[in-house]
Image (cartoon, rainbow, N blue to C red):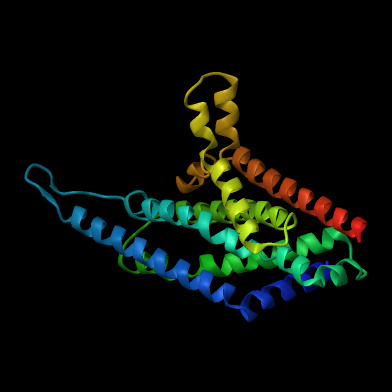
Amino acid sequence: MRNVLAIAQKELKSYFASPIAYVVIGLFALLYGYFFAVMLQYFVRASLNVNPMMGPQSLNINQDLLRPAISNVLILLLFIIPAMTMRAYAEERRSGTIELLLTSPITDVEIVLGKFVGALALYAVMLAVTLPHVALLFAYGTPEWKPILTTYIGMLLLGGSFLSVGLFISTLTTNQIVAYIGTFSALLILWVISWLGSFSTGFFTDLTAYLSLIDHFDDFAKGVIDTTHVIYYLSLITFGLFLTAKSVDTERWRG
């Protein structure tokens, strides 16, 4: 565990030692702030829209403001997370530092977990940028806190799944651009795979719906924690890290 934390700390420092962390967090904060401001403006206008028969409309902060903003944020993750993982192994392989890492007295699992925890910590910092917006809603409104909590749990699980896929693809190439495009493509396929099932019925439809990354997130946004969705995300994270460890082991064997 000590080795895992040491590698995670090294990874987190490397993110902030380069422009990656600042660009990723800054871009995410800017775009999320824009989405939030647009939805807030829409929410205020809609709530003040007076119906002659019923008076002012009654809107739900969680359903009519936060959920649409979070939906846009999830799309952002498709573009941002590949940028976080593209250098994890690709840069080390290109520069040759991967050989030093593989010859050190640590296991492949510790290497993989350390890099994953480091990337997940950066992702958590990125999500923390959104908390002041949520605090603003509590200061001037009465949103339900349980759906907000489950939404953040879902975003952590979804982000962890994205990271595990990105780390694996980063082990397959020495080019960061190739790693970015490969990760983005893989995540996009898992995002829209349920569309294929919409053209058929039966087992194939159920399979594509189950494999869809975004379909498993909907219940979290509604305030529901279903063990089926939790198991799916944890299984995808475990499978991605397993493939990453096998790829790293292959690199050690070749060395």
